[in-house]
Amino acid sequence: MRFRTVITALAAVLAILPFKAGAQGSGKDNVFGGIVRLDRTIHDFGDIMVSDGPVTAIFKAENVSSAPMVIYNVVSSCGCTDVEWTRQPLKPGETGSIKATYKNDEGGYPFDKTLTVYFSGVKQPVILHLRGESHTKKVSLNEMYPAKFGNLGLKSVDIKGGNLSQGQQKSGEVKVANLGQKPMKVSFTDVSEGLSVSVDPNPVPARSTATMSFTVTSDRNHWGLNYYYATPVVDGKVYKAVVASSATASSRDDALNVKTQPNPLLGAGSEKVGIFTVTKEDFSSWSKEERDRGSQPMADVSTFEIGKVRKGTKVEAVFGISNRGKSTLRIHKVDTDTPHASVAPFGDLKPGEKGSLKVSLDTAEMPSGEVLVLLSLITNSPLRPIMNLYVTGWIE
Image (cartoon, rainbow, N blue to C red; front, side):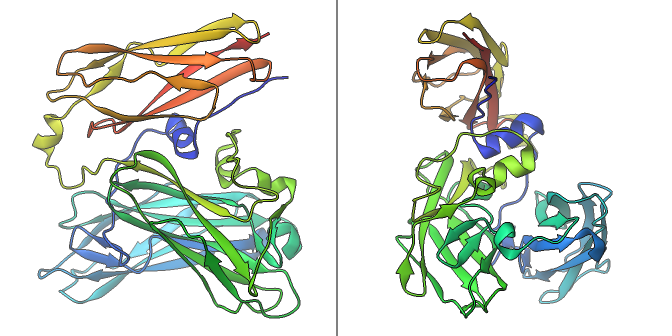
């Protein structure tokens, strides 16, 4: 049987797509560059029918600076979304809008479309998300929300928080459901430091949906993949999750069509929901000249082939890493999705220096068949803040 293991949601995204920088909001108010405040950066349409036709979201953008501001441009990630926005300059205190209409004509599937928005005075573009799940046929509320804590239903217990820069905040939202026949009160306990989470409306009316909003504040001491947890309290009681098979795969799998390593702290029998993020260094205030003077990691190969190995064999993959930049390269962290891989410490590299990144793989507990292990390097490079490497082979 073939087996593919992929490191983390974000690493999987970056393995498929090139890195694209975006501005980070400061604080819960989603203020970008001290210029513009957005009412939100994510709109979740929830569950919609293809037969419903196009659906629309409107984002509000307020000028919080002391000078006029312009929404220069809004670029959709695909032709499936039409965009309109306020064209005239916004005086201080004025609010404009960005109207996005998702055509909803691509069939039934989960979607996450992006809008890249360019504001005057904001150095990096701001990324907005349109999310939801389109269906071609009617499905019950219980089928839509297969992860259950009592009468509280979620699509997944493993929730994507996305990228954020160190020390900054990011907000998001997902739909939840009341699967019971009477209003349901929801609160949260054992909430991780740096996470706030709430549900609205609350109580949630019977047999209806609500929005679970969350804000994550990244810890300056934590790099790469981080999980934030909360325990739902439903009508005053804590429940262990009952999870249908469709909810054991995280939202990462739905969007990427890849298999990822499950989080052992989540799933059936657990009392927690988890929100995962990837924390990288913040280069949003750097000028082009500063970026050009930064470090630049380069690997001699992106994929190390171990060939065919007998199960139980311990193998080592070695990647040559050089610094082609103009300042010292530091790898803050190397994330790997499997407990069977370990990475040796890697020291800083001065400009022009080269080092060896050594990865040990113990195949004793790994499934037989094809193997693809993805490593995600979190670096101090403004050009490559996240760098992906692969180990491939076959276990006999």
